Image (cartoon, rainbow, N blue to C red; front, side):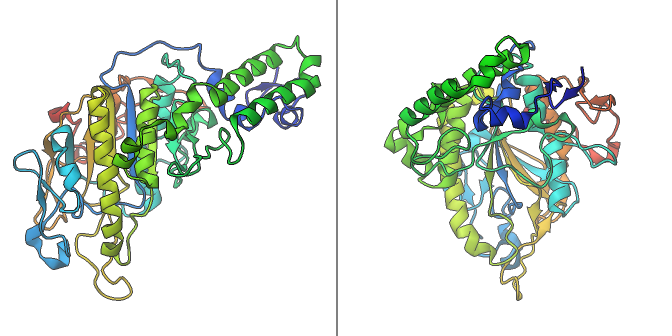
Length: 449
């Protein structure tokens, strides 16, 4: 029979299912994921989960993990006194004192480069580890991990295998040609507020009792489903619906209830959207979610850069340091990669003139990322920039080098193929596909793996 969006063509559209009450909003979101649960095998890997802290807009490398105090005010601005970390010889921005105490747990990648200053293209390259190519949109690493290490790979959790907190990343389609089944579930809402209104799961002013009542009412009025109770498709959807409600009303849904945490833990992360997003990410990987992205906007600082940084950096420092320490204390760091970074860095030379008034522009020639856990060795710096942070002078690291390194730690075979809707042979690794010129790679991050 003809296939249509995963439904056999029996004269019943997805819209009609919704109209008859078979598929509520939450069921629509989760039915594709739930239908995969019986497939796949478990892979052997050092890392089981990834927490990505996506610095939306591009953070300055000079004002975070690659300070240049000797370059002078036109480069370092007011941040001319970097702080020593708990690893000899490694200094980071003076605005990150809490992260300085965690340096033994993470590695700084100061050699990041791709030479692109466009948000969309740079985001695509950093997220997918691929160069843009005509006629194909590659999936980001979150969707690739969801494909291999989600339900296809033995993940048994009731939560979606790829979750973004709190909004989609935008800029490009995260799932590329893999399609909507491997798109992330975005929570929406603000985890620092009570209640945390998770899209499709938890609504403001709707108690758990009212959710249960609504489910019972749906069952009473669902005469269409009863009339088609012998249909295999309807039975499958009904099973997925039951599992979706189990997530909403059961233990899995409690992952989003941050009020279960002790007050001092919540304070430790910071009572703000980013801090509580970091806490939520910890709760999700505790439950086995393979890939969590924290979308952290506010870093595209063309104007009044330092005014923004005086607010953003302490918030980032508190939440991120708490996350790394907490997952380490709970024994999760060895199996969880924490990946911090954005699409590029920012211009090393500050634009003091109007209308920028101390702004920094886009800069893809040299920037920094950070990785911790999951098989990456902390207390290291990989790559080096010149005295002004303008050019990578040692050990360049391209997006495909980093993504391929993470894939290896996650147990994803670089020679494996991804299912393309037109049947094209698409390898996981651009190196297997011979897409990367030798002059545009520094290789996998073997020195810290």
